[in-house]
Length: 415
Image (cartoon, rainbow, N blue to C red; front, side):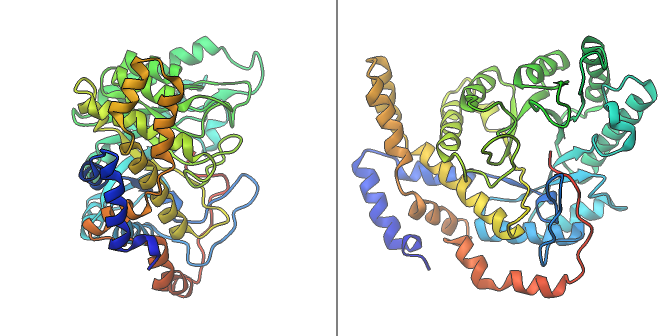
């Protein structure tokens, strides 16, 4: 066991935090409430547009992906949700898939249609100039709504690769209208309990313009559709230097932040382990979420925000990378709840810029590992889940048992 993961380390840290006037039990309670979905596509072999590297023991079937997800949940205590992607995760018995997930202590989370890998979608899917292609794409999304109902999911998560590569290739305004028309049909098919989360991406694979290019476009479309249409923020889908926490704060206050795809990036949509490149940004994002939870005007909405890992574990072990991702999210979340809110607001009222910033830094620079280890202990999980996974021999065992690798997805399937 790591020296920071024993109970004595937590007791010492808790005492220091209480001397600072912080409510340690509130931080632990919120840590126990945190729930993160892990994605089916993160457990199998996947990669960049250039190469899919096979990893020994990577999951080959939906059953193996579920087993790996259940292990991540047992290790961390906060990952009961399992996101699926259609058609990659298609099965003949959806009720059977739901029951198998429940047997493993999981639930099926967001359902993700695939509108970017069919040859017919070369010029787009829901925005395509040809009515028959738009109808094909629409029918696939409607099918995913039906699948979500069967597996007990209340979230349809939509990302489009639609856009153009050259000026004049298509009418941008016509594409906007086609998108609104097809999404109105999708929205009309949603059952009352289901949300439509609309994702966006600055560029790629379309490089001249993207039909859902940024959070403002996604927000405008969601508002036109209705209250159960919300924006999904992928933290890697922005221009360099974009203030993601500002976007998060705005959407929270508007009641339109539906969820996150959590990952890390250095340049563009790198899909690295979340918190591996800019952990301070991740902390600030969770700080904005905390303020929304503490505000009675936004608390009900903020509590429904979905946290989904969306990463391409291309050169690292699949399960261990997923566990490390969850550990990073838990740490950022705990630091956000350690911010001294009274001190921060007082500094803001008095215009004390440096004191306000120092208040955030004090929370961010706190070593929260003993605190998060205590959260996991209370959830019946492993205080140090990465060390526990390495000691379990699971990687070596599945490498022997899953000797034959399944074909990998060329191109990152999470998008």
